[in-house]
Length: 375
Image (cartoon, rainbow, N blue to C red; front, side, top):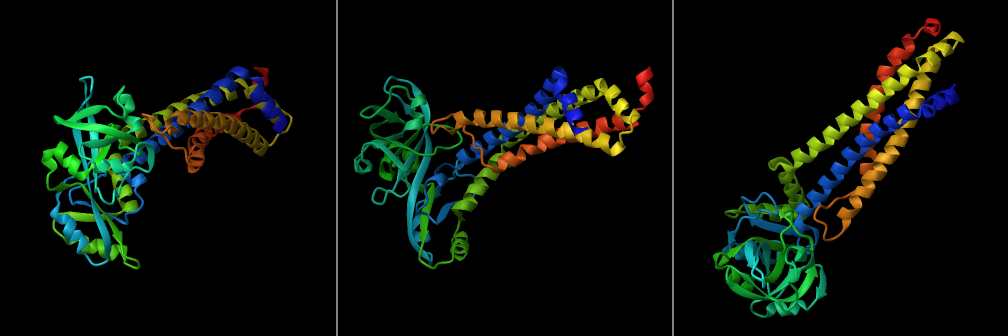
């Protein structure tokens, strides 16, 4: 009987193709949208992905995401350094400015200023140049993924930030923020010359704990200071991602698309499965006529649904995996991630499709009468 059910499934090529198409669409759209959302959320954590030396990230109390920092006064640096349990604390400036290109064009960029002596927070990968050159006045390093927005700009070129001249002395690679702006690295002193508005201002204080210090206790002590708060890297990462999902339209947009793909796939697959069963009702009636039990008919319908579901799942999850490959490139505009739990998540729309289709079809199959053979 199981072989007969499979021959019924594969023998009706048009209905079989429509069924597999609906299942694949449900799995592909749902999984691929989640993969892109995961990539966007990872990108939203920006420097949190590569600055691993800091135990605590101290920011303004109003800060809700690493990509949307609020400035604080530089006096907070000495306050943080005075907290018991802090081994060292280093400042960082992150400011959004307008860059004037050598050819006369303009581009919104992200300027990151590092402490000149320690260079805590520097990019993880140096491509050209020497980070020691950041000690020189009016010098910057260009993050290479931003070159597509700054065509023809490279080492030796001069750009202007708010009318102040800056010479590019090196290139590097680092994770950028969700906005995808080109990123320039420089010293704090240079950043304050380029953008006088951040004089005596800081964006982040990176702090290292003394050996054996309790991170939560030190964090509580920092939170008692006026106007600032402290996060561990993982906590700040989750805070930034939750902000993107809950406080912006990004989470809603991706969720809507994933649900739409899920609904469309369920409708297509259920309709195709229903029509498939309708076309083959005489065969089920014949099985009833020769004495097939109701449990046998149920097994045949569920077996057809499971085989079609696994084939549709394999095609859909394979297409979703292929669609995420371009987003894995370091300089991809639309990043994506495909962790292994996403393989399990992809089974949810498949199981929903075959579940709905099976329930609809079982009602018809179990009610079929052998008498329809003579109609």
